[in-house]
Image (cartoon, rainbow, N blue to C red; front, side, top):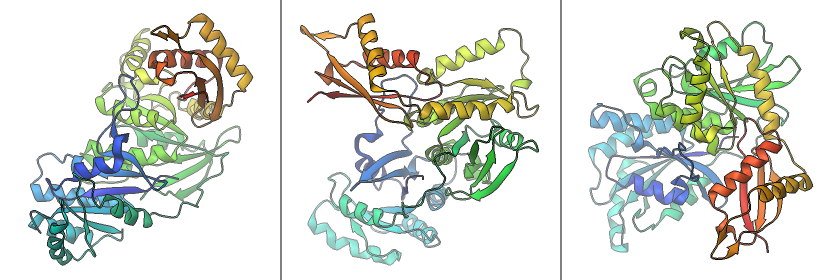
Length: 437
């Protein structure tokens, strides 16, 4: 199931970004030295006392030319839509402002837990100034200092106490869960409607755990069970949701978490945009199976080289998705849509593929013989043993003498040799380098 979501709201200059960075720690940084993997600061994973969750900084949601108070209002509404717990940040130095009161009035309408945090309480003497904030009617205030890290632990203790029960399991492991992600107007809904046409037996429509989403369960021609994870943002209307690209990313992230395989939909007419790479980057970092779907292929004037050129452009822009299959479709004419379930099933199988240790180590030995390990100051990196420790995505631990000598380029070489030897189309694979004890 999807991780719980904590949203941080409040007016500008109260220290929301500082609190955000405190909570997520170093996880906000890019974790791979690969061109094209981006990290949108609106959303990041975090952990506290063994509980994993995601944090939204609503201040990162750009609402264009909207008036100041309207922007804050919409950001609070987005938090109310998406979050399991809301942290409302104010500042002890400015006391209660009109903007604070506006946000409090909006948050009174939500049925979600709201924690009131008073930032910039940098020393014990300032604690006496927090009592005025009881007037906001949001319960006991939490005095914190983002710059010094004071009180953050108590705030997170309260936040995780409100998380939903983790025990529920949505679907059996045999069911393949997939979603379609992409910018607005790339044709996701059209592809969904075309895939779920009369030729497809829909088993049931199930309310999804993502708010306002409906998961659609159907059978493939070979009896495989699929669940299409619908992103609730497709059903939302209104200026805030439709015109805010970062909000569409937020919706996609919830669907990515719940999916086994993600279909990244591009618009053939518009080409590749930066937002496409951001959303695909999240799916890659989450370790999901990925298929690149180029929609509206019927609208282009094509020759014998059009498809090849478009594919080369995709490979150039999405360097980190070299493993992802590309399919060119048309939701309007249903061109190649019948192939999607087969490709989704194949990618899902690759996500669950397990390699015997003996076979894996033969591949590693051959790779080292072909391209010897690097040396540093006369010392050579030695690879002793490798074994697979997980699936979804396939994850391998490689035991070596000096982990710091494993340069990312050599790790990438090993990954490519593993890919050459086994069928890992459509799935990222992770290498964990450890010192042999």
